[in-house]
Image 1 (cartoon, rainbow, N blue to C red):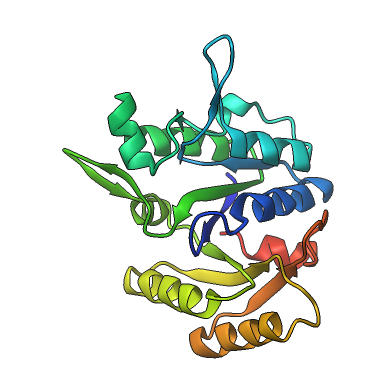
Image 2 (cartoon, rainbow, N blue to C red):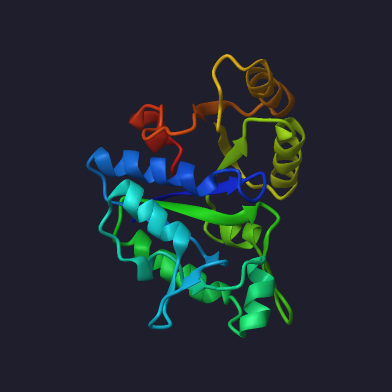
Length: 227
């Protein structure tokens, strides 16, 4: 049975998928069987044959150079570029938590490490109609620890602190923070790193710069984040 880690972000477009790709790559390069999983993915491109390609999953698969089939990476793929709960309504294909967990458990039986990426920020709803399903329901159902990805620039302190407070209030364990698009020597970025750690008590484990192709985190430390 695999060890799992959930990667969330402080919001949309903070580089969650980019960082996740580097994480999976590092695990795979260490000789471990590493897999990627995302419950629901919206804003994807439809191919001429009508098939929807999960863009985030394709990015991770390409960057990490893993052989895991795309079809096993994401059970719910939507074309409409809105939150998954709204895309599922518009496209008539609502998320079923039981299906999400079943597909996740299947991966866990085949791989050493499964990295689960969230949609948007931590409060992103996956379904909101006759049922209410949020990311926290998936996380708590499998007791996963979480890694927070945040943009290193302006607004990060507020976004990180609010994310941490929500997670703590829902008893979601936090393993650490990764700052993306970090500029060494930038006073704002360096201060954000200090303030995020000081205000949350959560360590910044790595700072990813633009164009990085490797995650600057010892593989042993990375593996220790998985539960």
